[in-house]
Length: 271
Image (cartoon, rainbow, N blue to C red; front, side, top):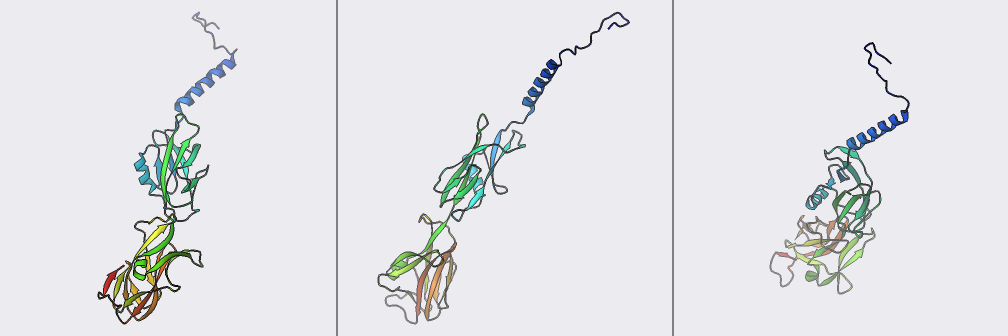
């Protein structure tokens, strides 16, 4: 077309619409690549406030792992998941990962992050991305403490018997003291005499669990027992002392007499 000034203007050509579409597509892809969020970190999550990050040092990961519950039963499970974040900490959803357990004898982990406990021990669950380059990883330290039995320390020395592990009618293991003879020899106490007993709690691998809590009780009124295991003869008669931890028990028979056993002058002793 011709303007009044005599200058000729040409309109944009519309004869190649496909080229315009291609140019717009290239621009859109370039903008998407430049502006789309990029995953910079993954975190393993389970219960609230319990997180392990790929940015954390191993020792920090172990500390955070302690926020998760300690497993107490074989077959217990925990569902874990992975969350992805960009460099600014913005949540980007989930991302495909490969799960692994450091010790399959202690716990396994399925392809979707379900942890299943097998036995006592400490294990590390790790997640590694499968479709990112470079790959990202996160790990989490978890612990299982499964009580297998309880035993009262000093039983053999005091009663001259043999301790053996038996399974009760309820399926629980019970540590009972058996004498060399057919009958059980009870622990004898004089009226007013005290004796300190100590109970050990073992896991399902027969390892002593440090700082395990034990609950003491007497089945009768012949003795009293403190939470620390100090026993006092209170009335003439027979009873049983029971040490219990997480459903597992150890028992010892006690007889209170009105005379002091020969050769024992002290009113207080420890086993």
